[in-house]
Length: 528
Image (cartoon, rainbow, N blue to C red; front, side):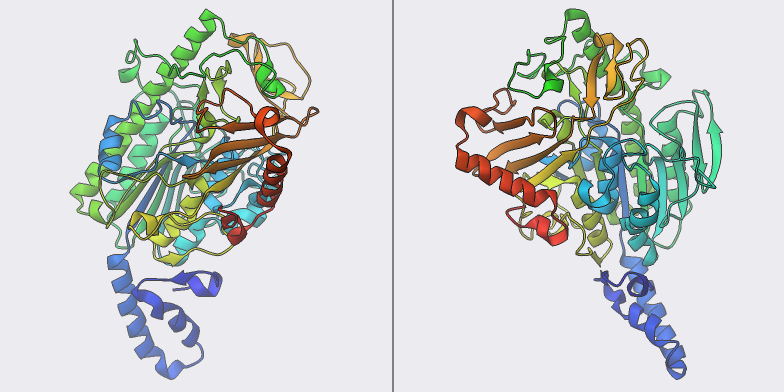
């Protein structure tokens, strides 16, 4: 009822439109109070009874190469009972910036979270004061949704000791169970409604994915009359990739996807970070990549169980048909592509593509939609699912009209951006290399996965006419890459100097400069 009072840019779309005027008039016209209260109560009852529940599940580091392979039950329960979006991309291929985009519907340059470090904006004072209060969940709570969070939040959450209470609950949440720091599976702290609770190594009661699942089941079982929004963020398949005991021996004969760009030697047509040795990876290093793939797959089986348990309970309580379920990942992951071992942070397809499955009331079943969609579209989509008109300042677009068969997503171009990070001590077993590189891996001859000048802005274009990637790296070389994915889907050949005319290069730079500063509706222009 207070939605318009506190959030003037939000318009309610359900039958409860009388509620904001009721909220506004009551103090001014007390003689109408009783009648208006009755009208408001009737509207509220009608709104509550028709408002859908919404569940958003966000995994950590799940790629779209073979990332869904272990999750047959999720594919059945959500994908074949709903809609799949094979052309789903993230605006930044790293945890904290991408999760910030999911929560706000904003590109990185508009929420100012640039990487996973506190100095890079991850759960910084700026985020807490100026951005967190605008996450989409605040709008849901303002229209009487009960809101619930469990799992990993932002990488630096609970680690800024300048705060008086490191376990504080962000605005907008009624029930809060957030992980301190980055993904783990055992031996961790959860902020339970603002107080730290420690979980140890008990294999039956402390495995984080199972803890998240059980909390979600308890919440659903509580039987509230109000609609709920639930966001679940399990650690899988992020490192340290610890599976449940019952899954430790599975996938013994599986291997990472041998795509045409798997373990190819990288030459001078890619930026310097990609040109590090070893390239190609040696046999033992390829075997290690395969083991990482198997470990990741084992952890995802527990997420598959979580999805099964939740949908089963929703069906038992007769609310599954009035519940939207969205399943996605915060970004993709490379496993040996271009001889880069195991990580994210790169602008290539392996890192920026993610799965997206959606089921819910009134949506078609077993349908694939090939429109270009993004992580920044989730916030406006969820708001519209709840009956709200998304605020104009959001950079993303609601997918709900497309899900209901009312036109296509009007996006042909979008921005991929990242600001690299470095650290003095990057990996045990690797010699210190200063503070300019990060994620150097001992198992791969200390090959580094990131650097401070792994900073780039890319224009990705995907339409019936074009399928290209244009990237400018902000390093000493001022390196530029251009790929035509229609003829080179695995991005093996940088065409920037070979087939890009001066006019074409200037047009791409001009479009890229436009997107780097776009905001709200302006991000939907130029075929955005």
